[in-house]
Length: 306
Image (tube, rainbow, N blue to C red):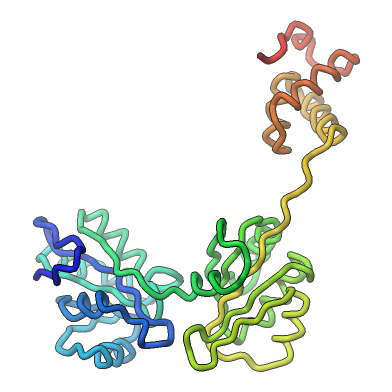
């Protein structure tokens, strides 16, 4: 089955096509004309909740499409059936309950399996709660990372929070309303109460809210009231550490040499470790060696870097 001539690539001659289709995150008006065309022509639509997707299709004036559930608990078992449909030359569309499939939603395993099987995989772009939150946050957008949902508890959660504390890029986090207060408190503890944060809630919906402040202020604000709707937390990146000074570089060089490294190797290792130029590290290493620091005897014959 061919899709409308809208500039998108057609099905491959070897089989069907898997199309990942973004759907509204709240406002049905955000369903794109191309998404409507693809969903209306697809032989099969995979969705998290068939009732929710049926309502979306009805709104778009689409009927007669076969819907198959595809969610976290059955995705793996659905893959052979979907690959069979694709091998038969059919077009399979995938949607999530809201937003872009595979982004904190099912579909990634099916995409990977289709690619391995040589099936064409394409997408219809559209709404994304994380990107919308980033755009309206007022925080830097030139470099950012998507964290998705944090682990609920335990070692993995602590490890991710420690990593986020030093992350210099703007970080996007999805969170459920009932866990928002706890997550904000954990972020404030890990990143500091003064770190800037934006809490975006119910995006594109009637009660859309974009709250801006510090993590400390957010803990007070959202710990004191009931929160509803899906939430995206946008955390400002950590400030870049101050460049290492000569004293710090010298101390690191001495540690490396004490472990058995040559001055040359120590300079290279310290440059990487502290983020300084190799020239700076090696010049200081030469000074320390000339002053009689204890290093391998072979260092006496090392030539300066050129």
